[in-house]
Length: 284
Image (tube, rainbow, N blue to C red; front, side, top):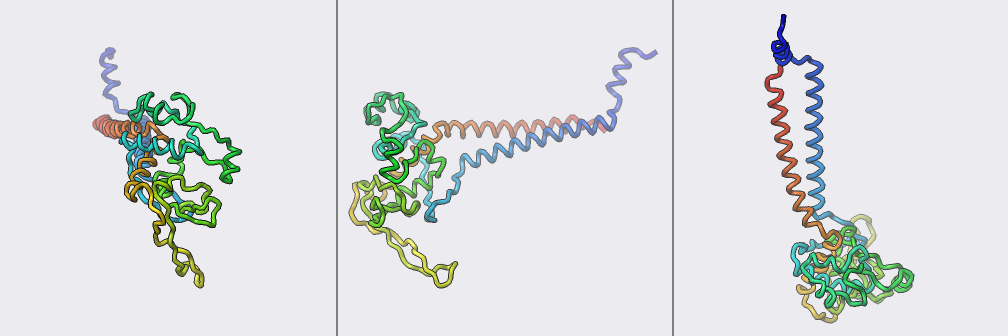
């Protein structure tokens, strides 16, 4: 007669059959594969968030690397000032409210006194009075909303775009741009940068024999602006940084949390792997 305790001990000591071992092994492998996939996806998302993506431009002009001032409130405040004074007349930012600028270190009173230039309230969206129909009449098409333009174009594109305007009497506005040829937008920052002419040279087209192409070789300053070249570039960096922040105000928090998530997944993967190894150690 086999006692109950002896029977339970026999069950515990009895070897696992091959089918059960195969199913358990397959299950553990599937878990590890899933964890590995999660880590890979997380790494990819982080790389896309932290790295600067390359964006194509209409003119084929190489893009300059934009300085990243998103983590500097003083730069963002200066960028906000430039944005409301020079961009918010024709371009709206309907996904952003004025009071969200508290996140860059401003009080409601500072926002109202320095950045709300219309009869809007601090809690209102950054809208404009110009209608889409009026915008199309004035510029040929309605100026785009700039709420997420930095994510659509990229910071490098915007940084280069604002710095490559030049006088061109053949266009409707009298201005042209290396990054966006025949752009309908005039150079609204010309007083800061001054008036410049672009110099081009005719060179042989390396791709088509017998053809030539215009190659940009530099700018010629016609009239000086109120800022030096370096001061203008620094202010444009602040403006682009503000537009990048406006496109995703929580990006710094997202990146900070992303690091902890990746660390957690890495540690959990190691623990799961060691647990799997320990579990199978005495099973033959």
